[in-house]
Length: 324
Ligand SMILES: [Zn+2]
Image (tube, rainbow, N blue to C red; front, side, top):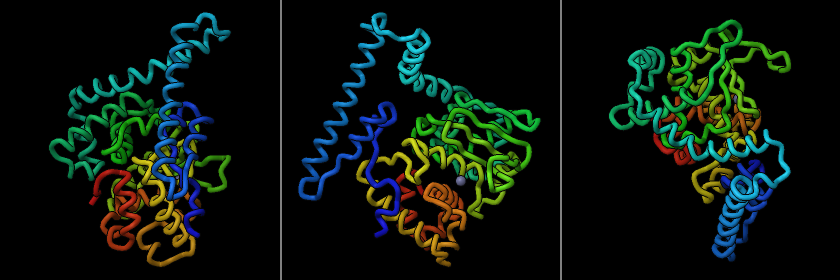
């Protein structure tokens, strides 16, 4: 049965991000059809209870008995940072989004990022706001002698923000840094030889700058390196590269598992129709399938809608808009 082949069918909710063991336990609470309504209501209550318990725990630790807890000062500082970061990050994003967009950035977008031309009015403002939030909070580093400048920051960030146009910037919470090479690079620990990009579970995305530009130049070939790597970061949102990001609603997980699993199997079997829409590399594993399907959704949207409407539908529901 296709359903069981997809690695994550049961939804995870955000308490899992901050309280892994209990959050994961809560996320596995499912009930058969007859008891679904009562059972899922109980599960939702349980998750809310965990949230409340967690908030109380933080409060007690940080405010009341903080000095009494046997805790190293650096650990206490870390707890404070985690606590305060959540409160202030949204304020920072709003501030960054409200700042004027430098004219030179618009020039970089016009020159290298063709999809931006289609964004007008409110959509464009929303996009630019997230772009400024992304650039203002994510550090970029050059490797192989590359100096990071505004052009690189703006173009790479545009690909990242394209994915979250209708999602929250917090989808990139696990992204800690972006490293850019001036050439297609070789990772000595990898068996694949030359790399165009990599996404690591510890929050680093590595990109080849020429590959980023090549990916953006042809808008309809279904190959966009930066988009692919940032899709892996979205996938990492629930803690692992498993082909399923944190979806909008718990109810979305069943359809997601069914549709993604079915198309993954078709691609693995070498189905000619699938290969028209998706790159064969997507057959590697579910995480690569999600990243490759994302590239196709944004660059071959019309073809996907026509040839694989169910796949288009689940991706459209997750990303929140029609790319074509
Ligand atoms: Zn990949």
